[in-house]
Image 1: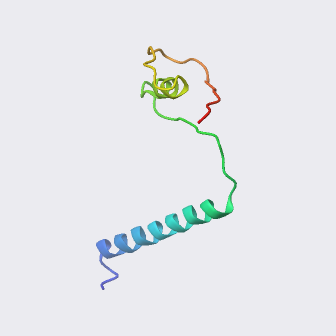
Image 2: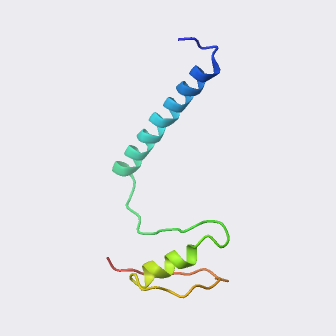
Length: 77
């Protein structure tokens, strides 16, 4: 293993980041409280309002429009 090779260093860093990510997810799964909140984020005109309306209306086809304010809804599963 040649530690002066950029490819080897990249693979090692990717492995360490992957292991840390898995450990963080496992820690969060077993230690933290469960949350019931979902935040939909994205670029302008990327379909956030459409997805929100589709979920809030239980699958009905919503009409599309540009949102000018935040949307909030309580959904029973």
